Image (cartoon, rainbow, N blue to C red; front, side, top):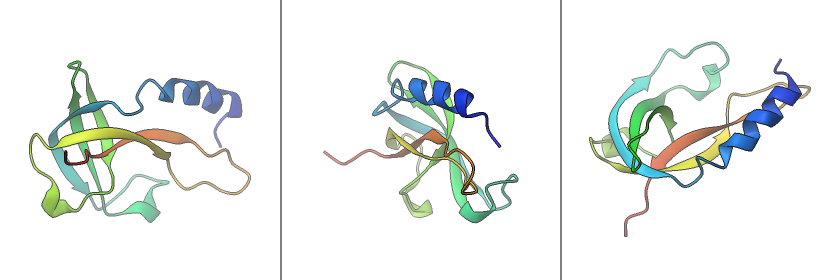
Length: 102
């Protein structure tokens, strides 16, 4: 179980990542997840490079495998992390999805 105060402090930092734009460098399909993520498989994880040059490993959401390609334009979103029990604190994390086509 996560410490509620620690979760709260981390959630305050999430807004700095909201709606950041960048591109997908590499990705992989996760079929055998770590403990706590068993209900989310398969899912995609990758490394993105933001417009400011920062690189970050993230989970890719709202995307089919056939749509993943190098340099895919992405945007960050905030989503629930792993599934938690009713008595636990819900943790939110940064994930990315394909940017809307303009």
